[in-house]
Length: 625
Image (cartoon, rainbow, N blue to C red; front, side, top):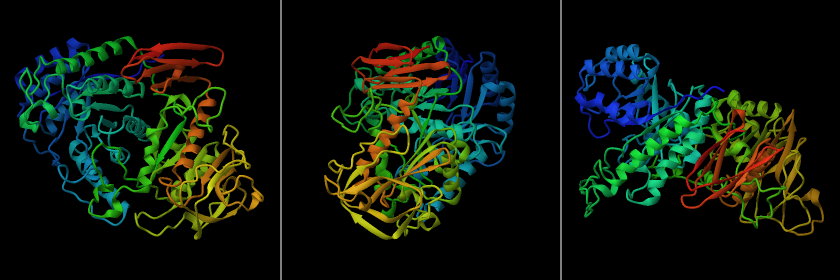
């Protein structure tokens, strides 16, 4: 089986760039450690052209891949103008010619931060707009400007290190492969976004830039932070990342509690601040990258990335970012309408779906408990505007967060369902406005009979505080808690519903206040299912995003869809709550125990046989069939 492309290494120049010693550092810090990648980070250090070309020749000779940081200062350079470091278009093209495939291109720093982070301390752009589309277009223009400059007018490959959930928008400009800065946000959101972004853009691979020093935790001496850096490598690897960079920490540490001059007043360390080369935590970083390099020499990951059947959908113009700093949507932090609200709160779903349901959850069904993961252990997060080709890669699409519906997206969803897909969304996702405080206007004036088999009248609404009941699903693999003569479930507040006219859909969710129903047909409808072609479209009819009152029932449907997808798999994997897994071609399974302290038990069920494993804390285990 063909082995996947992997490039693993370090950044040289995070704190200083000793030009005359760089070649020796490549040998000492990269080649001698069994690694094959360098990220050159020159900052403002003047570099003579002869050194740049000499390094390129040395890298190619030793089969070391490399990238070159371009314009870290975030001031886009245009045309063939030499930068302060003496690095111009002519030099770049000559370097590219010498290094060939080993030169992976230029790297731009996190452009999405201009639109995904609080303004102070980042970018000056406040994006004071009324329409989300305006902010999205502004982001596109910004990225295009930087990519045009960094690509030397399209002649040098470019990637952007992205730290925000806007990675899908950032990558729509002309780039080679997307790169995630880890651990700026929840990796179990960000890596699925990154992987899906690479697929949508037909990138050959995607990269992980591990910024553990600054974003792995603010206490460098903390034991869990030290465990976390190795877990970041392993989780990214099993998730399909191909290029790995440790930003810093292997030579010294300057962040947080290390140096008084960086703001940590009163901190004294026996090695003197900042933490120097021989400090145990700095040595730990070197040990981690060496251990990971050794693992890569032993393992052969199949090409193609992990198998994925389920995709969550980041809605069109959804500006949410799972970054760990404060944020306002599209950086419009002077308008309260752009503050995080009910559409964004839906994203907390990802804090729950990666663990098994509670033992007392009576809505968990099956012969074995598969609720801890979807089919093949993972999911992607695609953008609603990515197009039908992207959608068609999956069996299940689940909408989360804001969405501005368009005719093109609607037609793509219809085609997805007709060709066998399972779609789940709410009526709120059918809204066509791109204004946060805009008047609701459903696509086709609510006539979604060709997809969802019903007409929704958003002008004649009912605001109800009823509980939920289910009928049996039309979807063969779905197992709802279907019983009309049972306590109403999850009654938790008022929700707005449209008046619904059925045009072929089956009402599989009804609203109730009674244990014993007298007239099932008269019960208000909260969920419909419609068979379209070979697939099924499932609609939660709420006009409110399911963040507050509707969240629990929304989550119950999503969790059943995920478990159902797992039940359909020829390979089933289950174990403790901290178990994560992915499946590659040839039925190769990667098991990862994300528990820092305890063993976990894992079972791989191939249908004809079961294999059991006990994983040590933080252990990544490849399993061949």
